[in-house]
Length: 279
Image 1 (cartoon, one colour):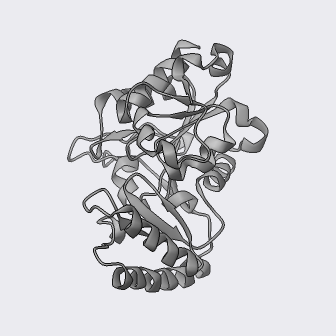
Image 2 (cartoon, one colour; image 1 turned 60 degrees about the horizontal axis):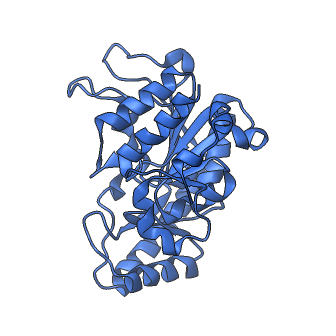
Image 3 (cartoon, one colour; image 1 turned 120 degrees about the vertical axis):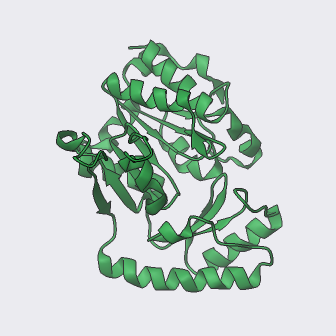
């Protein structure tokens, strides 16, 4: 991984969009910090597309995508939030990106899988979750599980702590049951289907922005922090890890091309500054 300062200015100048993870990339200690929020706004103001892609559930994403007038929180300035590792998304249409009469952002909700598939998969996923909880002592469902529609998540570092052997045992059960399983900075996610963050990125860029991501991979950047970002690090030449990625460095088969000097939201702001400085 090269320092962010080694990112050529001509490559940065050509970037038209930023794809980013959320937990421990945009957020710090579970919340978006003012510098990261400002970075998102500045990227949008500069005319870049900005899409967040996360393993978090779609229900967890809604208050950040919609905003809350009563609490005085604005919607995050994004084109879309893709949740559950590429399966479902909230989009903000360009013609509707404004506060509604109730003071919240108007959203559209899109699914990668059809309703019948989602229903059948949901039943199967709950059986696998029960198997994990029974077979691996100390495991608990992620606290955000009520908002999940297309996957399951076991907490390993957010509110619980699992050892590497426990994490591997969970992964083994999920994969033996035919699930696709990955480890984020906080959760072990399992789902049914061939989608992942990269598939979700191609899907939402096409569906919502009307662009062919495959033909312009060199014009998009990806920012992440964990092993479940490797499919994105491998796919994008303009890939960046925030500094806290270094705790997973020994586990990375496909590291990002560059790494920021700062961690979490401050690291994302550093990436945004590098992009804006090149424009």
